[in-house]
Amino acid sequence: MLVKLGKRELELGGPYLGELRESNDILTDYPALRQRMAEDGYLLLRGLIDPGKVQQARRTIMSFMDEQGALTPGTPVLEGVMPRGGKSVGMMGRKGITHHPDVLAVLESQELFDFFRAFLAETPLTFDYKWLRAVGHEEFTGSHYDVVYMGRGSERLYTTWVPMGDTPLEQGVLAMCEGSHNHPSFEKIRRTYGRMDVDRDRVQGWFSDDPLEIIQKYGGRWLTTPCFRAGDVMIFGMYMMHASTTNTTNRFRLSADVRYQPAADPVDDRWVGDNPIGHYAWFSEPEKNVPMTAARAQWGV
Ligand SMILES: O=C(O)CCC(=O)C(=O)O
Image (cartoon, rainbow, N blue to C red; front, top):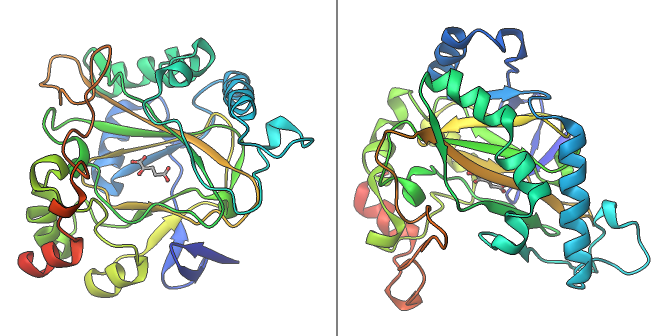
């Protein structure tokens, strides 16, 4: 099966693209889950959240998008059919929809709080800001570490990626870059790009939009899965390079990414409070932004 990752087409099962490991076999064994996180850099947990709640959240978000005129009239709302050439609908941090009770029932679900309470062995906290995405045709997320966007607080901060409904590979799902969190070949990237802060340094956030370039230079493979189902989650740390497959369909890919950390740790204050400030400098004056190619040349990576 050929998979579009960024602008590349890679064969699933070929030398560059493999399958993610599921961790449901150790779902309630928290020491083993911590060990797995340290080894793999991510946890793919199937059915962690009640799929019924995810479907309800999907219905609410799609209806909201329909009311904004973002969907093709006369098509089933739950399908999220986009108009020709449909582009992303901006819902990131828009509390009117991200904090709808149906959406919070998933993103701040009992299941996620219970999981993180046990996984962290501490009381968890989640950022108030929610990255809710409706990703359009031929759109994708380029390779990056999350630390460059939210690295001012806890070192035990985790991203949880939640597909809002069944989401096949061709609609745009996450892919992880094997070994990018701990392999020595990525050490220099972690020490340079990984210490960047997009608001302080005003550098573009994506390390690359070419997934092949990274693994040809630094090793490893990209890992993904043929399908995410409602209720599945991907959890990973701040130094796991990830990207998304390209949405080649005519239906919006609906997903959210949220963050959890120990409540007692320092918190990146851009992302908490009633009205989180968010990225206050990055792209506020585009002429001051540094292209990633220039930053990488300086870092020698
Ligand atoms: O959903 C996407 O396309 C990107 C998500 C992401 O980068 C993240 O969860 O940190």
